[in-house]
Length: 470
Image (cartoon, rainbow, N blue to C red; front, side, top):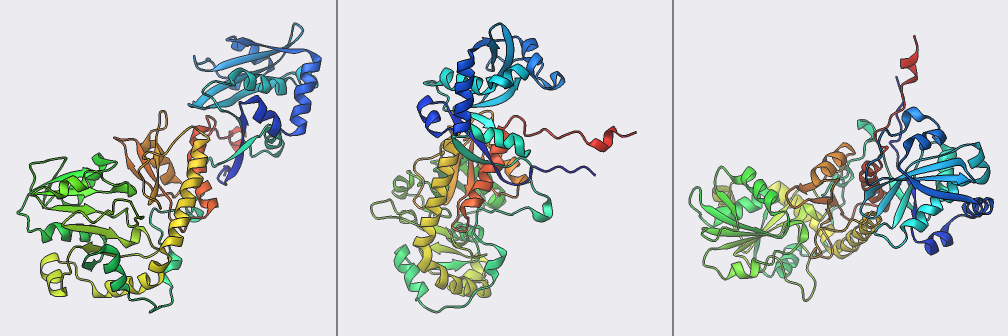
């Protein structure tokens, strides 16, 4: 059986393409190599001749057969003698990848490769490229070499851990350890929630049933048309509504000739149309599943509709629990009309809210810190959040996917690593876990799993030595 590793988080090395920043942060050993090559008189020329690169590459059979238009090949000479070469490949709009690099004995003696790396720094300074990804290795000596040129580390993970040891990182904060709690009767939670929502409310088992109950409460006829407005990811949101409730009602994006309206503050981004829709004759429901918090001066999601739906399980480490805001329905009505009465579940939710509701601001601060860490990490690749209007604190980190890394491909890759995401392929948005239960190392794991697919060598697996045996 062949061992395949690279399934543990490690750190790769970026080299700034700003000479001033790079020189300030380079290790002294790297600086010595650059100076040595300069004193020896090494010169660099750009080329498209892969046959020359093959002369200094350790195994010509593994060298690329073609040079893509965007790839750059630089050859190092000592006098007229070829002593080294390097190929760099763009992998994101702001990052180049040190794809191939080789020197012969004469090149190693004068540290020609150090000079080639520095040539890339000087050549691309002032362009759209900010970093050269020098690389990462699970071989100690090669990793040590890469780290000499590290001016900015980044987390990376190539292969998913085996299923039995694979972490499960979800969008919701609940985990197995949260099944155990100590009951605390410290606040009048019903009063606290009524004051916060500024309205009466009804506990319901989950978001799905709370939203269904809001629609039922409007007494809509069978197959009634519901117009849907959503802040972000509208296409996939409408698809989800059709999947969940399409056997009973019809849903269409931005349909004005509808019998009811639904405004979704999806992934924490406020739906700007909510206020205008509240003045229409058709009743409005606000889906506030992903936007529980609001700050002074912010639009208060849930304050515009006839009903609003909130999901406690999206924000707190509890399994169940949602609120239908706008009316209190007695148990008999929930049983007869809404068909989702669950008193045991309701009691558990209230007990857990006694514990977690008072901590919501601390949880919010942790979410904001996780968002900031994601923003820093993806910023190293020139990637940005998908929506600037996300709430503070955020529900999820909204990544705007960019070619060649599409939202669906990112979603599928992260699934293999045990990371739950939600995705809208139309808007190319991926919602990443950002809840308060995540530690910095777990955020690094999520990013590292994505970062592995950016490395062009992530699919490489060493040939099984046993396969060569007779």
